[in-house]
Amino acid sequence: MEKRNIPISLPSMGVEEWEALRAPIESGWITQGPKVKEFEKMFAERHQVKHALAVSNCTTALHLALIACGVGEGDEVIVPAFTWVSTANAVIYCNATPVFIDIDPVTFNIDVTQIANKITPRTKAIIPVHLFGLCADIDYIKDNFPQLKIVEDGACAAGSGLRGRPAGGLGDIGCFSFHPRKSVTTGEGGMLTTNDDKMAAHLDMLRNHGASISEEQRHHGPKPYILAAFDIVGYNYRMTDLQGALGIVQLGKLDKFIDERELWAAYYSEKLKNISWLRTPVTAQGYKHGWQSYVTFIDENISPVKRNDIMEVLQQKGIATRPGTHAVHMLGAYANKYGIKPGDFPGAFIADQQSMSIPLHNRMVKEDFDYVIAALMDL
Image 1 (tube, rainbow, N blue to C red):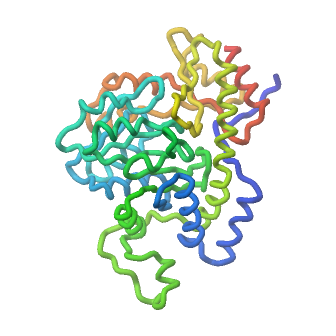
Image 2 (cartoon, rainbow, N blue to C red):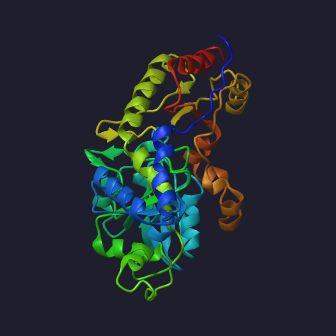
Image 3 (cartoon, rainbow, N blue to C red):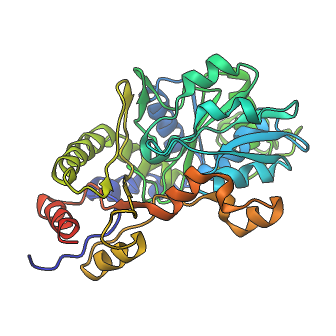
């Protein structure tokens, strides 16, 4: 088979996105404004929540969500040990302590059965991650730990769901990413979701320097020359209207994108099922997978070579791969600060060393998928 070059991910954009930028550029309103507001309304409706508030990225969304939940110095926040580093970083931003919990080796999500052992009088919140687009078991957490504020890290989970309910409204606050590796993108960008009116109002001020009203509200009000009141210290975590315009178009394609990814994920799973050393993703009944990534697990006890060697072979064939993500407790900033050893969270450690994401995006065609499958079967 002729060599192909297949990136791990590629945003799916076209003429519609290009044309969507015209309105904010011609209007001159390119910071947070009407396009962001329209994007927020669409996102809230799609995810069945009362409020959606756009921000600069998912990391800033996590930071604001924790502040809105009252997390501060001396508090503890439970996070999975296998996730992108920003999940834990957001806790540090609040001068709180991240408390790591191991993962379920099959789903890669937080092992909810281990939560009880980590709760102390200082535990204020938990950040279950919907990793790779598969929701964590929020219902278990709500039923068993009602005292905890739940911040959903749905960076990968736009369009995902649990038992008929979309991600983002399962806990107290949801946080989403629109990075180019996600199903829909605005370049960078994020979204906060909540059904709590008071939290929404607080988040709205926090993302805009602590201002009592937005710049758009002030500009179009009767006295635009009167500055807003600033009664709290906030941040400049706003999304631009250029990004909002892109988001409107992209969000309109979300369900189509997920349907396509689900089809090709099933194709991968069927074609790869006889490779004994390669475990493919599993979706339990009642879960709607968003398929941000297709993450496999390599059993190095029986694989022909180690995971990194397999990734190198695939790279030479033009197939980009990545580890699923990293084990945060193994990163220097956390291992050194808290004296954590790799083996302290064995599930996260093994996932860090043996997970492998293979290409899955909406710019791929059947020949690309077949090329990846053939390369894996040839190992």
